[in-house]
Length: 128
Image (tube, rainbow, N blue to C red; front, side, top):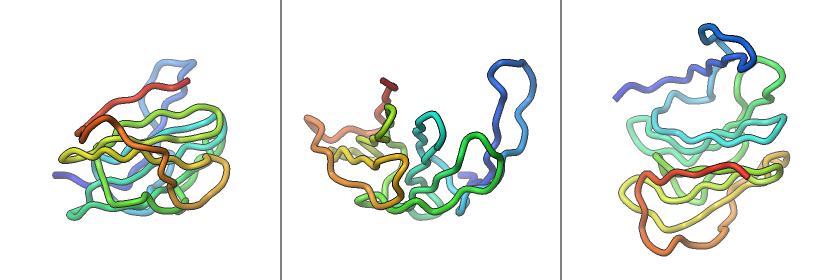
């Protein structure tokens, strides 16, 4: 499994190749991202072991990610969705029922949102 700390971006209004945005704080695979209009948050991942780290970046300016906080527990391959205030992660590797969230504009650790109806692995999400 390949691990990477690279963050690339595309300008959606034009066609073309990706460009370098910056770097995550750790090299991982299978992390999951959410965003609001100004900030993106990337959580969890696999880096030889599973991590609970949440990073963030400011979308309007290129640069490296910064540590945001931690998930409730180390997970990867989570489903994710976000709205204008919260980033929500649910399900994960090997099955996981906890739903957790952060307030995107306030750094800190994830908080328990509730539970799925069962242990779900590699779920998906959508934005509001």
